[in-house]
Amino acid sequence: MMNVNLISDTVTKPTQGMMEAMFNAQVGDDVFKEDPSVNELEEKVANLFGMEKALFFPSGTMTNQTAIKILTNPGDQLICSKYAHVYNYEGGGVSFNSGVSCKLIDGDRGLFNFEDVLKSINPPDFYHSPKTSLVCIENTTNKGGGACWDIIELKKIKKICDENNLFFHLDGARIWNAFVKNKINFKEYGKLFDTISVCLSKGLGCPVGSLLLTSSQYFENALKIRKILGGGMRQSGYLAACGIYALDNNINRLKDDHLKAKEIESVLSKLDYIKKVEPVETNIVIFELDDKFSSSIFQNKLSEKGIEIISMGDNKLRVVTHLDYNQEQHEYFLECIDNIHYNF
Image (cartoon, rainbow, N blue to C red; front, side, top):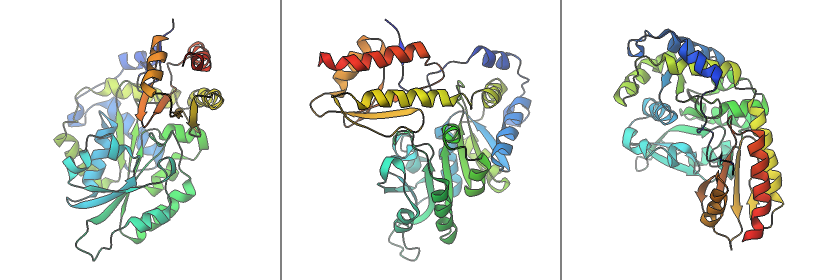
């Protein structure tokens, strides 16, 4: 029996090349901003997006929470999708850390348009409602099945933000996947957003790490909030070296993950026990079982074959392809899901 872990693209382990980069890293104390590898990574990512500053963090949750903290005041409200990571999967940090509430948009697959944003803004002179101060979008959408945002729509939303004095934050945990899918230059995002969070430990295969991109105006505040949240690390250049290696070697290979995800979508779409498969654009496949079948039973049947996937609730399941999911495992997984319905 083969072991296949498809619960997330965070389950990967460093490759030999990444381990060698880590072993050879030049390091210092990053809390004093004296780690050369961290400084190199931050400069590299800032230049990639055409933004003034980047700051290395332990996690994407911490980068998102820091962005929200520096762009809002307690009692404010941010606008995001009902599927947004900042709302669903960050432990209530929006309210705990920043005292901010969320206005949720019920859009398809975690996406929405500029008209949805416009309708969600509270009247600034109506003091009974929270002040709307920030719009957050996630690209690609996690709970939305890896969907990518249309850059034209993002520009329209940016215009609404400018006209209404709103900040604009991008949770770009999987922005690398969006780039491989639509080839939009990273600098295009840098022009639109006040802050951008990017993750190294998902599709790029690093063991740890995210970065927050921002302007020089907000950098010192971001550094302060990182300290308050406990995100200051010492010789973190060993981790930054993994990020530098990943940016140089692991972006273009994401197309292999996307191809495997499309092939999984194709097989699932033909099975009689599958009610719906969300359209696959990148490396995430979300599908819903027929009402007469239980997702927990289905997961158990896969687990018996050494295959692990994750539940999204409401009889929905998620598969995420990644660096450590090879062709042999892929063929085994496709064979298993193609035959498992005979056992229901």
